Image 1 (cartoon, helix red, strand yellow):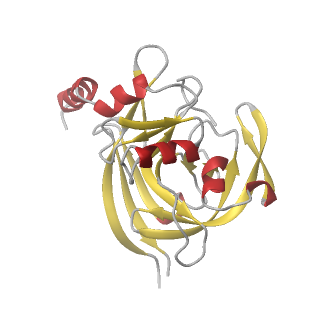
Image 2: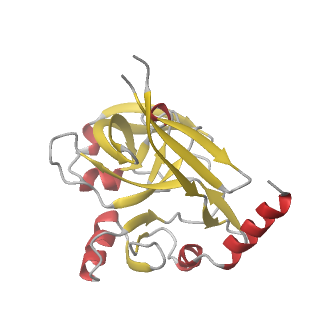
Length: 146
Length: 77
């Protein structure tokens, strides 16, 4: 059986200062994360940027610490960014996203300048995603793999 | 879709966006907690944990946390 499609929603782009007196846009969705154990307490909701240029989901290490991770004990993964290589620490977590929980292996970094980034592994593989520049919104359709 | 539709939407977003106004006033390099409707800042802290604690002290238990960068600039991670 193939994948089935579930919840869909339309998220208006979020306007952010551009540092030059104007503004730019992020496609951003509020999410929670938690340890992958039953009834583990969730983080507070935080704004995570939808970014197809990120290989996997990466979250700020402070959120990982808050949910109970010993972040530096995770598997080290070196990522390549525009400013060069950087280390992240991988952990298995539950991502609370539209349509329910996704079990993912995510990176955690103390150097991330934002709260979280939703990348190809862990997010884009669970959604059909349309970036709509005419309506200034992002459309998400959850895919459930058989 | 007419081009004007997009222009009108851009203008509306530029004029009336309390979340954007909140971000403009947010202290750089800090964590901020936005109200449930994301219309205003209810707490600030140098760490995620302190922003959450300050939000709870302010009576907001379901905030949306944002990490404000050290400087607003186009993002490339």
